Length: 206
Length: 206
DNA sequence: TCACTTGGTAAACACCGTTTAGTTTACACC
DNA sequence: GGTGTAAACTAAACGGTGTTTACCAAGTGA
Image 1 (cartoon, rainbow over the protein chains, first blue to last red):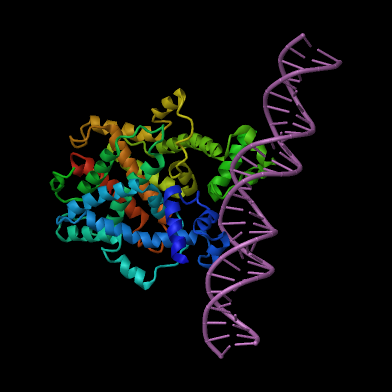
Image 2 (cartoon, rainbow over the protein chains, first blue to last red; image 1 turned 30 degrees about the vertical axis):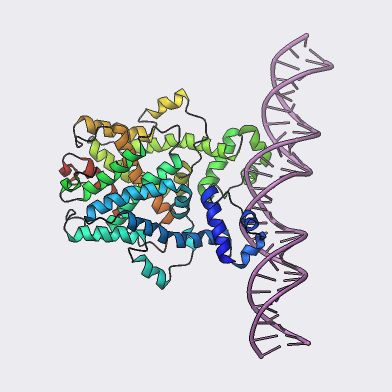
């Protein structure tokens, strides 16, 4: 039934990418025929959307394991590096979740979703925002930065930029890339130092 | 002939996106039939690649007009904001050029391309690297940052992150985005300040 | 027993990128 | 001038796609 479809679809999407997987192949791999999928999903994109909804939580779990550090600034720094590593280790998964503009048409979040969105254990963005808020409350950031959401969104954009450029153009012969490790640390280091009230807080991390 | 194909393809790609445009529609719009395109291009992606090759230069031109500022740090800051604005004003164009992983298979750059790649007037990345190098030579950056390419790539990734997240998830009901303007300035401001030897250099820009 | 829903199939529709075969055109060469 | 050849184009087809339609079989409640 529904779970088998999602399982097969996830495996194939992650291995071959969204566009390379056809409904016929998904159906065949679990012994069904293509139109059968339409009794459970309204179209191909809804399968993708359902997978994304579920896997956002999994990313957050990995996040929490990865970055249980007392100091919020160090936690943000490590989260950034971990985020990029996650993206590069699961490029198709990452592309599915953060580089495909198909979430605009999915249903708006339910109340349960909103609750999960605010739980740092279930949502990676909430995890980041929580750390930012902690650092803000300790007065670690410069006084002109007060909005935890703005800062979290900016930090997220920074690591997303490194990750997505690597995924789409990492092997482009036109680009003379520095190593991904250097770029990741330069991004997390420079962005964070630019936010900090005392730039020396970053000593020993970069 | 070839120019008419490219002209029609550019217009349709930018209006409807790469996947939504079929070879038949391109051909029909200029009075040809689909297989005729294969006389001039080996496949659909080659049309895209040729368009990208040409339009990279146009972006650089817009860049040069936009940011003729003496101070290299201010120039970098303004370039970043201009870059994001360009991306958001031409989202399909931007997606074509920087968010589609199809440039790996196009031919490696020729000698003329390499020359253009190093000319700040013709290549936006060279423009950015040139400004970074200038700032480096003036001793504006912290001593641990010495590699102009690494810094240029990091700055590029930062603005690309803001732009691409806005394009793919800008109207996502799950995300409670701050304004694009705030996010752009927070990105360029924090990243640049984190690189600067004297953070006060940024006063009056943000 | 009978209506009705559920979950599936086979066939078809309208496309897609691409290939093949054949046709027209123009131009170089003996 | 006749002829061979290459280029530019078309009509038809191939295999594939997401999706719809029509139909069918099993289960369920009245």
